[in-house]
Length: 178
Image (tube, rainbow, N blue to C red; front, side, top):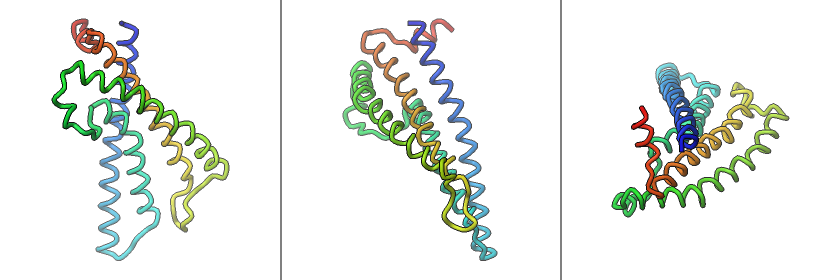
């Protein structure tokens, strides 16, 4: 059990660290949007680079923050039934969801996006617009990285759910050891 606890702790810590980094990227996107709005409405100047940077940062935040959101149980779900379930029933729902949907879905996206990123890198894909951001392949590389983080967090959730289902709470065991 200590082995699985260590794996969960490592994954949770990784996504916590990434989530904290993404929080700073969120502050950065607010600043970029503010500058873009001021430049556009106060000075009637607009730059393609700034506009593309806004959606590149948003994509980065979305992709890299998804694992953190799963860690914090912040993903949207239909809670009509889930919220009324016992902790063991919730663990069953999470375990089945991880095994049947999250792991295969992440695998499919990771596997298909690698070729997508490789093609973008091989042609050094950049913005088709003059003055746009070069190296668009860097943004595309965050697709498999983000889904690897979600996959890892799903594995952590699956392990925790499995132990809850069999009557051993891996998280309370960690708290007892601390």
